[in-house]
Amino acid sequence: MPRPPSLAALADLVLTSHRPTRSHLRMWLTSVVTYLLYTGLLWLQVALGYTPRDLAVGYTLLAFCTNLLLYFGVRHGWGPAWDRNLGTTQLLIGVLFMWGAYAMAGPLSGATLIIVASHIVYAVFGFTATRVWQLVTASLAGLALTMILCHQWQPERYPLGQQVVAWLYTCLVVVLIARLATLVTRMNENLRTQRRELAAALDKVRELATRDDLTQVHNRRHITELMRIEQAQHERSGSPLCVALLDIDFFKVVNDTFGHQAGDEVLRRFAQATQQALRTSDLLGRWGGEEFVVVFPDTLIAQARVALRRAKEQLQQADFSAVGPGLRITFSAGLVQVDPGERIEDAIERADQAMYRAKTKGRDRIECVAPIDRFSEAPRRA
Image 1: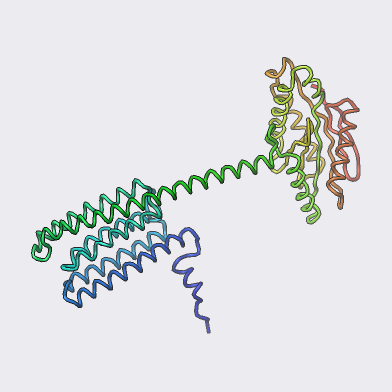
Image 2: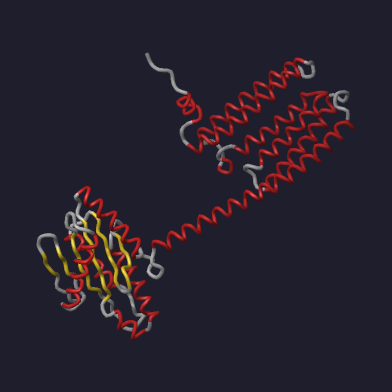
């Protein structure tokens, strides 16, 4: 025998499990409860003889059909671009129903005016200050028109003087509530602005904490963390992992000849050219001074060597003439494949030793150290 669905399953069925839509449907459900309470009061008016039954039946059916359509509209995102969750539409429909409730209340019409104030309170949660005042103007103007029509329709039940005084009282209360609503709305807008600014500041702090300020690649602390993550993945899966240390050749000469600002520009352009040559999965970080580290996840040493050769070719095409006439930048690299069980610090040390050998053998070359065979690449000549 199948088990009856749980309350949580029923809630997911009616309100969906999609969190944003579910939140909007909860607001719709709050509106439905309000309509049920107003409809209950309407039928109390019928029982007391203040409202004709036919009008109450029509009002009830119209409210039911309207809220049913709104449910499907909110659930399936049928709202226009300016009101995707139909919150504004629900509020405007509520204002229309309020005018109808006033017209059906007869001698009790003054009691329905509190509904105008409730609409303004709801507007605080989704309207800007300008739109709150637009809603106030439309509500009061529509109410004035409703009162005039009611007086012309049944002057004995809606005497003109009584309508004018009721409307003025309503204006007084609604304007005061709107003023408070405007203050709350502006406070909410300021809070949203502050949250956006705080989020932007946090993003900036995270960027500063993980990026080298000069070259905009990973800084040493962050690239070390990333290497540890990749090394753990390498241990779990057995996938190959390579690490390379790159040192810009004769960088001190650049600083001494053209100045430190020129050296900074060389570092920036070097990082940019190298990043463009690498794959999106490769990780580039500034290790310190003119040294950079490259991490090649899930990569054999032969594949990593191809990537470094591509970086050398990219660097040959880079234009450093703005830094110094005829300036050409090369790098020496030590490339290792991380051995099983090897600490990342030990792999970096082997890469550093390989890079030192590349510099002592004439620079502008890649010295590779594989787990089993060891070989070197002679410098390529143009």
